Image (cartoon, rainbow, N blue to C red; front, side, top):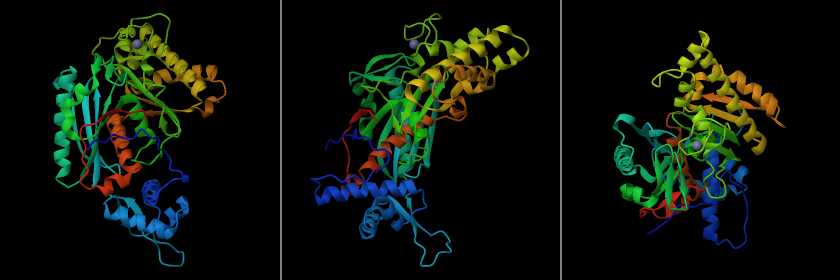
Length: 424
Ligand SMILES: [Zn+2]
């Protein structure tokens, strides 16, 4: 059987009624709705609460919850102690361990792999660092395949059900068939060819790493949009990546390629970027560029720019000012265009944030149009290791959450290798 992942947009559930539904369609729809609300309730809601939130009758909710429990997707927990009269109702929680997805993040310096269940728990993890990664697509995919199989073996010892594999790549899909990653040096690599290494791992979903890290911030748990409704995610190391979330959905542009924040123009002049252009953010704010401007050796820690500036180094001081101003101009521009006031800064810039923050704020004060600077929130996130791996795993689990009936109705459901780049 050949199946493909749905491209449907399915953020917050809505109780929309459509004409033409068969009773079976209605059951599938309501099953998904009930599961989404149980996830949204985060262990606080009973069957009656789910009925109240969805508008479905209590009897029907109860029958659907029984079905979800039987399928191993939901569990019941003891009720909270309540002073209210009557018998307290049991609470509903997503089932731990029973279903899982594997998310693997490919980046220039390591592979990070997580096996994640419906509760968001990481059941198994693995890392491979740069000195053992050969950067050709075939070598990376062989390494990735070994990692995915290893994680699957670990988790399946618990008899958990595998939902799919997600891969985050610092690149974009072009013409539905070729992946280009400037930072990895992949130039229009045949997408299906490189995924042959994982053909036996069932459905494969892939997406841009910055976008998937942003997705993990918007959905800190599978199916639970508890993060910012809209946000700008800006991260980096050797290169610059990022993502934009609007209404809990990744903003990916007309063709799914709107993720190259690092190649926005940050200056009219400057070094030539790896993409061939001049003045890209990446060529000004990447780690190598910052160390070079501060006249520090390339193997220095980024924090040494702060200590150099503190001891009077003019190049270090200028580097911090330039970096802060460039970042401020960029953030104000995106915020004015997209009307987003939540930003998360991650990666290497967090190491020098105290030195660049005053200049970022100066630019924001000067350039924000309708968003008041005090409303513009910047969160510094120092621990985003594996964030894209988590995001892509959550995105794969969304396929289960969006249509649990498909998985319940066929316990033996298996897929031929189907590859799909996320157009969220
Ligand atoms: Zn560039």
